[in-house]
Image (tube, rainbow, N blue to C red; front, side):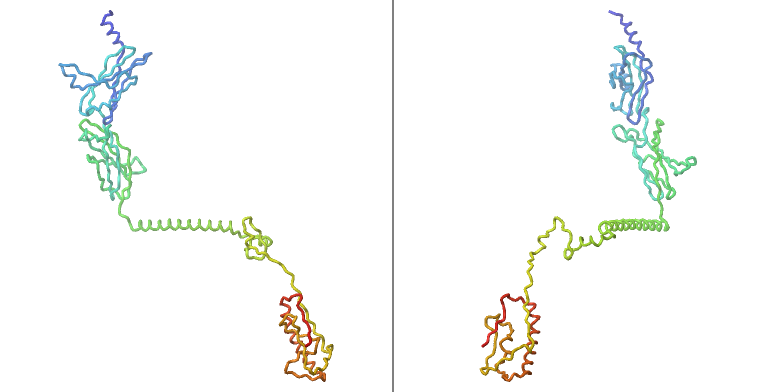
Amino acid sequence: MPDLPLLVSVAAELAPPENLTLITLNTNYTLSWDQSFAEGHAVNFTTQYVAKFKLRSKKKSPVWQTACEKTSRRSCDLTKLNLYYLGIYMLRVQASVNGRVSDWIMKEFCPDKDAAVGPPSRVDLSPAGSGLDIIIVDPLTSGNRSMKDHIPDLYYHILYWERSVDTEDLETQTLASNVPVVTLSDLKAWTWYCVSIQSRYDFFNKESSFTSPHCVQTEGAFLWWQIFGYFLLSLVICFLFVLVILCSFFWFFKTVKATFYPSNQLPTHFQYLCDSSGSDIPRLLTPDSDSELLCDKVTVCPEPPVPEIHIPAPEALPVPPSDSSGRHCRQGSGGSGDSGVYSTGCSSGLRQPDSIQSSSGDEDSGQSFLDLEQVKMKNMAPGLKTRLLIADEGVVDMCV
């Protein structure tokens, strides 16, 4: 069996970690370290912790709690341990390679004393007349709770200044407050101001970093010329808006009119194609047009001949013989009925029932009768040309 002191000296040859450092912010804790030697094999590290007051007990040895076991990383996150903020703890780290272990290196840690405090988690600015309202949200723990639950004496150092292009001539002013809402008064109206805030804890001289600057413009009473200027500006904007709308509408209307109703007219020999359906000029028919519904069947018939009636001259008429029996000539019953045409071939004229004509052949009396017949035929001529006559209708002379 090998000698025990020899094994201990071999194990002690492995150098322990160096430069144990705590990286903290509010309740977020991370322990990191360095390794001074280079090994051909991977080095593992083990981190343990225990409350400091337990190391003072002489009756029983303290029980170390393991935070990180045999990890190759050179850091260990202690946030998940939920360490008591006002407690004091002892931390230790050991290195191991192929079964060889180094000595423990230890470090004392008190969150209240050693943990850094962070700046406010959020800052809001709002103008209040010629002043500013500052709303401050406390720094938060890892569990999203206010840090004032652990540090009741936490307060804020407020730094504000008037914004300017020349950063060398800035005149900063400071204000301390332990309340979350602060009002900055006695500021210039209509002026830009910037604000930056820092958290402080005087018992252990803790100071956080400043927040990024937040800038806002103060307000004030409106002057009459400002009101008039805003009103005039609004009128100009409205006028330009309406003008753009009208121009756009006019351009749209002009484009549509030029597209569907162009100013260049079609040639005359093409214009009849676009006439209305009621025009007598023929036009093109589309495939979908119901041309059959717009046409009627038309039958063309020849114009029937109009009979012409020739009246002979009075000198050519024969002198009728004297007839004492009083016979007269009338239209045959085989005619067209009430045609009103009397034959001149039978006798010299139509005798009225109560008329008496001498047989002496008075020429003056015969001439008057012929003139009367010519007047009757002239009056009947227009009617005969416009009336359709039956082809076989005629005038039949019959002597009674």
